[in-house]
Picture 1: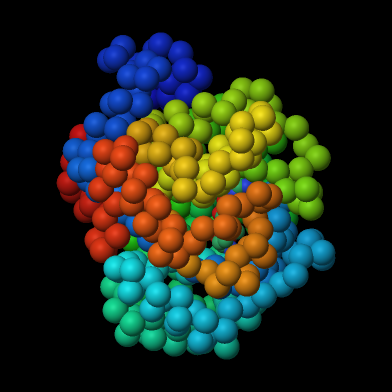
Picture 2: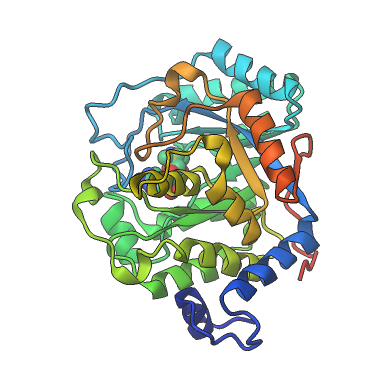
Length: 366
Ligand code: SAM
């Protein structure tokens, strides 16, 4: 059992874990071993479709928040959504992830019926699992979508510090977010949550608490992303405390989360890849193509086991701009093949056609 004090020093890169073999690279090795005991060499791929960039929220970090009046807004047409799902199914995918801003036209009463009909139609295309990430909807939408066949839901708690959560999410509270996450669990969804690392106002103790909260919530999926400042978002003018700003921290957070949550599906996030590419090009390295996937491969070596491939229609991909420099050049089947090759060269097996359910709670993957 890792206690908070130990976890903090582990995240700082200090040498203080009871089994003193967990220092530096050894931490990553141990996390990778834990991952492979649970999931072998398989990397689960999911097809991501970004439904809409309309959002009624004003999350201080996010580029598609309601405050951004300069952003062109889009909402996908049903035909384009079904075409993207069929393309994913044709590439062998069995899971699609439908993500969007908290769009009133999707999460309100009428909209939630529309989403329910989309879920049913996607399942008819041969897709076995539908994951939703549409924010906190109104009324009984979560149960309607579950009844329509949605299997999983992603809703990050973003930070476990209630004061920081309140400052970043005007009109919302951590308590309400956690209540929604609990409701998802009650409704029988496979539930994903997670956090942002490197936020202005965040302390290393907060990050340790985030990892502990992931364990306490007994999550099926855990998304851990680096905060990437978006120039149009209010938070971008604020500086990040030194103790959470290092580029290595996120990898230690992924590894520690894998040790504490051995059964969870943990994605190597797109934000991580974006950060890595942005850092490489600003440090003078030749801009790397997105097939490089260096940040994501590193995350796999630290215990991650899932990668999402973008299947959004090309015309809207650049508009789903949560943060700058998001890689949008490669998507769909091309990106799938490129990733299969990259992961195979690194010793993994990209299991496109695996439904990729999380292991059950009683399975002890340690
Ligand atoms: N509307 C849904 C929700 O709020 O759960 C899903 C979409 S939301 C844009 C998806 C995730 O993007 C958020 O949970 C947040 O962690 C991440 N995100 C937003 N802005 C970001 C930024 N500037 N840097 C990194 N990640 C960001």
